[in-house]
Length: 255
Image 1 (cartoon, rainbow, N blue to C red):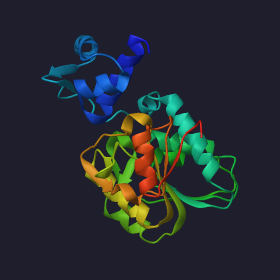
Image 2 (cartoon, rainbow, N blue to C red):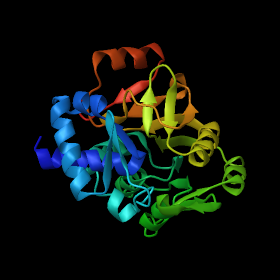
Image 3 (cartoon, rainbow, N blue to C red):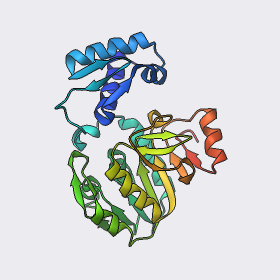
Image 4 (tube, helix red, strand yellow):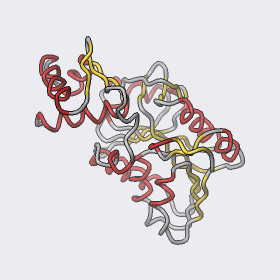
């Protein structure tokens, strides 16, 4: 991986999660901690990043969450790979839920060739992406708009979801921990995702490889709650064993 590509991925992580740790980044990218520190030095000069002991965070006043127009540029190939896997799982005539994430928009785009789909979403961006989906029944949860995430959250969204039963829910997350489960960065969005899981027959998480072994602020559900996980690269043997122990299917492009 080129240094500039690595820096861009680190910056994308900072924009999504507000902070990073040197040790975790070094392990993820397979480089030394000194290399990561040099990357953070450059980002501090170029991109409004503050170095801290053991990591870095965004300066106060920077955006808490990137608008979709920017988020869609991060990890594009991973999102396309995950979307292709989702398209393999969804059949004509299915009813499903998509949450509010840039990955969900890629999934929605990959599903457009499907017929007679009923889809429920809390994402303004997914609604816009599917505005030309002929023959689909598309429902919005309603709710309070959650800033630049374009997510509809709150009591109205959750009450709306309680009225539906769907075949599949395909949800994103900020982190997966084999002991503690699936996490999101924001409790209001995690709460909506718990409601989405409750009304779905099949519970599916879409998460690129960087989400494995990480926690975020708010737990969505336990590790065993997922029926399937879609990811962009083959997980390690340890992760595959953990999924097998919990009867969770894991799909990746090579499989």
